[in-house]
Each structure stands twice: as C-alpha cells, then as structure tokens.
Amino acid sequence: MAKEAVGEIIVLVWEGLPNAFFIKGHVSEAEAMIALNRGVLLYQHKRAILGPIIHNYARWTLESPLVLARRLYPEAPLSTEPWPDGNSLTLRSYQEPGRGRFPVTCFEVIEWRETTNDR
Image 1: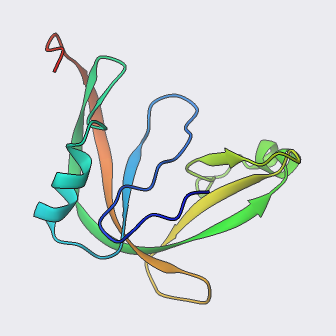
Image 2 (image 1 turned 180 degrees about the horizontal axis):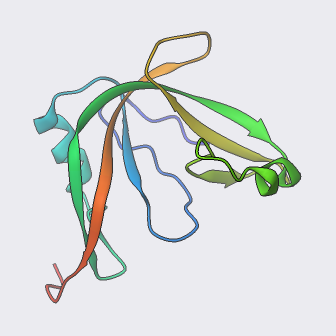
C-alpha cells in the first residue's frame, strides 16, 4: 500500500474495469482532473466517462480472501490489494468522517467507451 500525497490518485487493483477513481484529500475538480489525466482515463483502449465530483472519506480494511469471496451484497469492496500472506486491503468509501478515515475525492465511472485514439 503506497502512501499517496494529497492530490495524487490512489492506485488500486481492480478485477475488470474500474468503477470509480479516488484522489487523496478533498481537492477541487480542476486539481482532480489533473491527477486523473496522468493516464488513468484511458484504460485497455477505453475512455472513462465520469460522473460528478464527490468528496467522501475512506479507510483501508484488512480482509481475508474467504471474506472477500462471500461478499455478494451491494456494499461489496470496490477493489483489493493483495498482501503477501494471502489477505487483502480493501478501500472502503464513506460519506461521513470517522475513526481511521481520511478525505478522498471520488469520481464514479458512468461508462467506458471504446476509443480509436492511441493518446
């Protein structure tokens, strides 16, 4: 788990295409777009169409692969980062501040569109 600075994108490991992007800290839309335009909006020859900016709070939780496999409800983890011992860190997003939570700026992905532009 890397320690991102405020205004940097939080790099996550996804199964499939990402459904959201997270930037550390509550930053402006302009600052967030600078972070996102460093390459993440194009992914596997697809371009992300983003929803509105959301200022939330997040925290890392430690979960075993067995717990992750059993999560079939709507609040399932967005992504995981494997640990060497087989456990995973999951980034969870919340609307309110709380113990162990840090500010994040979020953009949900509305859809992924095919692109022919290789930029």
